[in-house]
Length: 235
Image 1: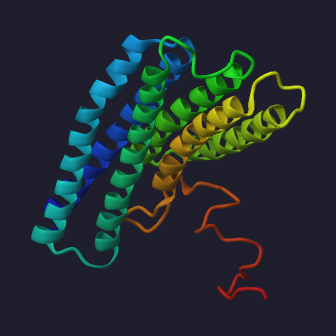
Image 2: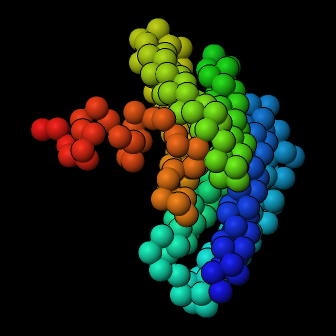
């Protein structure tokens, strides 16, 4: 019974890893469509999203089947619930990619992003894609190097965020306030596209350890200097 349970749980983990990769690909295509005002590519992202939704629904169904038929306990139960949360987070990134593509469709044939900030959006798009593919590797293999790279990518995204807002708040910026609001909304979609996958790789695995032991100063499970060797917490 336990062997069958872990085989099904491993299959569910592989499915979530594949979804991470698909979400990264979708964000890459959505970014290109946004920057190039490519309506054909935008429509491709929008139409392909249903396949992503179907895969997420199947993964959720598989997780509930494990709960119903295998009666997991303790760590195994936590692993299944973590998988359900991971499915929801990866699905959210896919939905954000579709949202970016829909923005391109609404603004076509015009560009949704001004030329003087499109470089920053291209950088954020590349980072989001890297996070998607690295998250897949971490989910499937627990690669600690890829896990560490995810944290660096998250910091790089934050740095672009700060610099972009410096540009938007510059009194010499030649665009109207409405454009600044629009750029901010597009940025928030791009920024939040990475967060779900970061949550996915930071959740505990079946052995109660985070995949890849992500060495983030923001990691909720990481021991800090405040924790003494005897397990107590410094005040």
